[in-house]
Image (cartoon, rainbow, N blue to C red; front, side, top):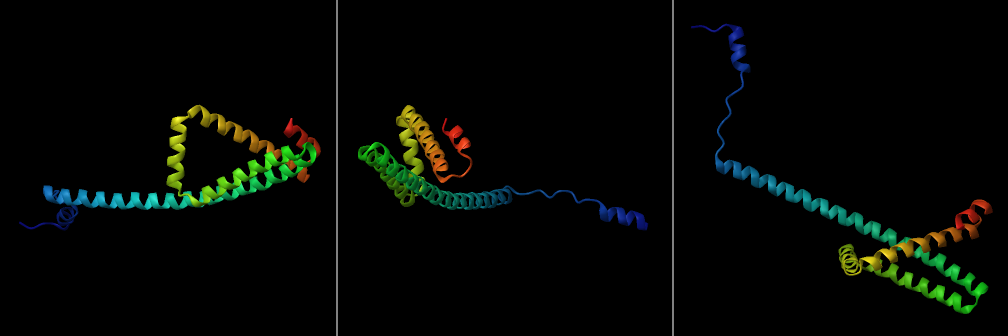
Length: 161
């Protein structure tokens, strides 16, 4: 029996029946997928660690900027309200400076673990501290804007109100 060209083309295009895969082959494929996914996870974690370290350095620099503002505010407070007020503000600036150094010199994992421990032991104190710090930093930046003359005096007064 002879086949026509159309029948030959149809036979060539027909998909082959799937081959049976042995359990050992499936196990090998699963092992390779697992190894590849573990490598990707490890690469992702390493990349996140590098990004976190970069952000940590930026945070330490930002704290350093706040320290400069606090020290300037301490000088002003000393002139306006007396040496006691000025030195109290300067001590706060010194504490922030120590915090910046600690952030620079501590690995991100250690910072995260320590923060979790503190929040877990004292959640109310942690929330209160975060609120007070946010309020204080906002006031300090607003006062810095007022003194630097950026923006109109009216907008600066509104910001402090």
